Image (tube, rainbow, N blue to C red; front, side, top):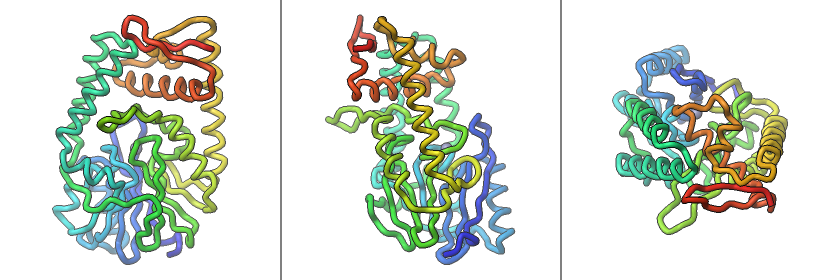
Length: 317
Ligand SMILES: [Zn+2]
């Protein structure tokens, strides 16, 4: 495959992150990487992109999902009305999509419990719950057909699991063409915030930023020329982008140590210092980011956690 057969298509979203990219591979099998947000506008832009390439939606044969956030899977349901194709994603995504409603409720319960544990006031947790509800309209009930294990080969692509931004992040790498589809794993100008995630039954919660940093090291090693990200232009210097992310993470770690000083602070207070404009819409992101960094510092032996009156707090050691 030459890079010329990859068509990079930004689709509109009403979100602060701006457009979300899907990529169309026009050679056989006709493949779409990610499926945008479930809106009429995004669907119209996608359909036009197919037409411009001399294709109809019914030509679509394969959909690869880099992860399952709503801005990357939304149009799957509408596409199924026009084409019969096979969808591939992380093995857990295939399972997750089977009981979507139940899983969503469990994730919500986890999010609200952890926000309370971090000291977020009840009225902000309630407002955050309403914000969350407003995203449901974009969901799709489409299923994932096949899960791909780490190291799997799918046609020209090698599959890499890179948990961090989400637990189910995957890269599709074409080593011969020296390109990769990287979803929200690395982005320019936006920090791909690793969100806190509900632990699997009977297992401890994964440390999302610790995990993300390990994934970034793996991607840094890839010998490729172009990464096609979920948001923004194609990336031609992925190592520099990753090094800039590491530098930003180190800066934030240093800032947290500085603001902790000799105090023992609830996570919510730390998040508010880091993100003074954080409102109910972004509180879960803020809490996720703060805990992520605190867990990295904890692994480095620089901070320790304790519960005070049931609230998760951190102090320097
Ligand atoms: Zn995204």
